Amino acid sequence: MIKCLYLKNFRNYSEFRLDGIGKINIFIGKNGQGKTNLLEAVFFLSMLRSFRTSQISDIKKIGSSGFYVGAELSSRGGYGRHIESEYLDKRKLMIEGVPVGKASEFVNQIRTVVFSPNDILLVTGSSSMRRRFADMFISAVHPEYMAILQDYYLAMQKRNAFLRIGENSKTIASAKAFEPILADKGVKIVCFRERMLSELSSHVAGLVKDVTGTEREFLLKYNIQRGTDNEGEYLSRFEQERERDFSRQYATFGPHLDDFEFIYDGKALRNYGSTGQCRLASLCLKLACIRIMKSSGDEPEIVALVDDVTGELDIETKKSFYSVIKDADQIFFTFTESPDTDDFLSGAKIFKISEGQTV
Ligand SMILES: Nc1ncnc2c1ncn2[C@@H]1O[C@H](COP(=O)(O)OP(=O)(O)O)[C@@H](O)[C@H]1O
Ligand SMILES: [Mg+2]
Image 1 (tube, helix red, strand yellow):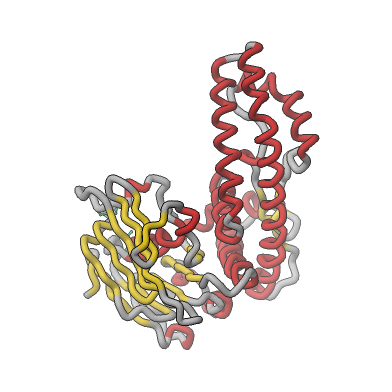
Image 2 (cartoon, rainbow, N blue to C red; image 1 turned 180 degrees about the vertical axis):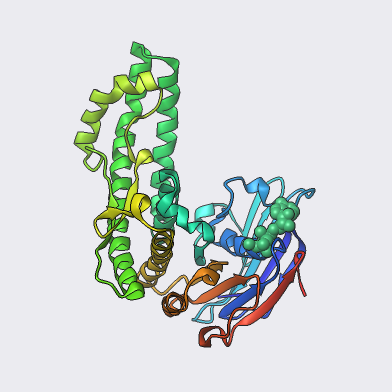
């Protein structure tokens, strides 16, 4: 659990220290005061990236030269830790004051699941958002996945560079040299995604059923591209597609183009679902993440970051939401107004946020 959070030049926070954090915490404040920024800071400590931007330089306070975010953690076993990350000229990561070189040794000391109003885009938005979600979630549960993904993308970029030069005997040989790596890593990525999406699918189906009380079929369908789940077929597909890759100047098949669909009652939610159905599906997807993390072991603890989403839910859905989210070890909510009284929130710690400060 996070006991204490420190920020320096993080978004609109100059110097900030939050003590007295509990299991359930609520940040209340008007728009633009820094509530989401606090959730972003917690997420950053978990993954060393942001859920709102891919540009780390966006995070530092405008006009400052870098930022710092740290926390005091305590866990069930009583084993506490002080974790810190500083991004000035260089990145500096520390656990208990001892520098840590690799990001992989720092990330996932706490595991976070973010609920944001933008989650609906996982259902209705572009495939790149779904891939990003799946990749981040798989990396959180299986840290070894991140390295496989990096190796794949690096090999693809290098091969693409030869595709862009144009087709000749030398560039063909150079492009070919990367294909066994792509096939090896690509098949592993597809296998991880297939397993995770099938697990997510059954959890989401159960959650949708619980929340709506209907028996309609729900599933997440992973559209695996031909040959990408088998190394031999993958390699022979390169033989068929290499020419096309050269003419288009990029890899025209592979997990970097994968997508998955939400199917409800036999139809694609993206094309046929109401806004309410799409929102519910995205909410259940995130709740399913908590269930899967929960079932994958006791440590590290799960922190749910719930940004402005419960306000739009009807009372029944809100009750179901609270009944699942309570599986998280710690929760941070943001609200613009004090939430309606609810048993679930009754013991919560409340922090009023205004212009990057508690008031
Ligand atoms: N890099 C930055 N430096 C300084 N201020 C920032 C930076 N990024 C965002 N902000 C400010 O943070 C505020 C938004 O914070 P946010 O946490 O999104 O608000 P909310 O309370 O509505 O969730 C805005 O006032 C915005 O101008
Ligand atoms: Mg916000």
